[in-house]
Image (tube, rainbow, N blue to C red; front, side, top):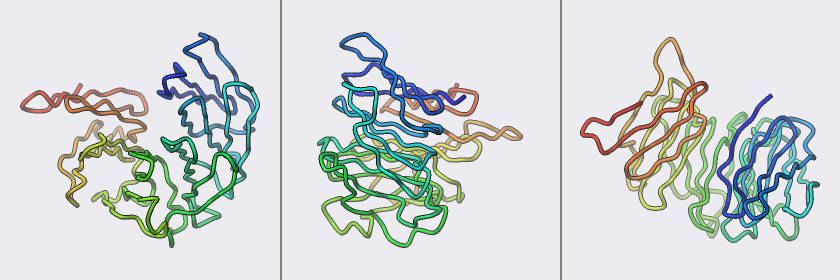
Amino acid sequence: MKQCLHAADTLLKHLCYSEGRILVHSRARDTCLELSGHNQEVNCLDAKGGLIVSGSRDRTARMWTLTSSHPRDTFPMADRVWSVAISPTLRSFVTGTACCENTSPLRVWDVERAQCVGNLGLGFRRGAGVLDMQFECPSQLFTCGYDTFIRLWDLRLNPGKCVMEWEEPHDSALYCLQTDGNHMIASGSSYYGGVRLWDKRQAACLQFFQLSSRPVSSPVYCLRFSSSHLHAALASSLHSLDFRQNNVYIR
């Protein structure tokens, strides 16, 4: 059984997903709602303004509201869905797939019409799945995944080409990312708990931290950071980095 917690919006306390079920804990009503619809494990969730989008191994994305336990809409995909992100405007969302059966892993969907309105990027190689994504503003989306790149997309410009990209130098898949809304990006890689800090204005990474060591190797599944701390979740441990120390303290 797979269980994950998702830090949701102000209407929701948290989301928990296990196998094909999603549990939603409402802040306002202090109640728990079970959303059932996926027939295989749920891989990803995003929630904003009472809107929830989920992606699954069953090759669908589903859109939910807090008024029903059944999906409002279902979006068939050619591949497993690894990542989703809802636009801050709530008018669209983006899905990232495994890129095995379809070489366009990034798709933009209109919430009201429940239709695909475009793809991001061209010429992805097979298997270049998108594992994480984050909207920084309604027009800017960051993505990362198996092809070792962080990419910045501007949805107002040519959708076939990203506006900036940063490459993981050790050729490791990138499992997660976060931006601070200003100049910094943090990314978590697939080997030995590797975390990198990047400045958007530079091509090379600023700093590298290895949170696990041989013979134990774990991806960084999730991370969050601020100006003073970075927290990272590995397979069987949580790590906290304190940037306020002269030598960064890891525990």
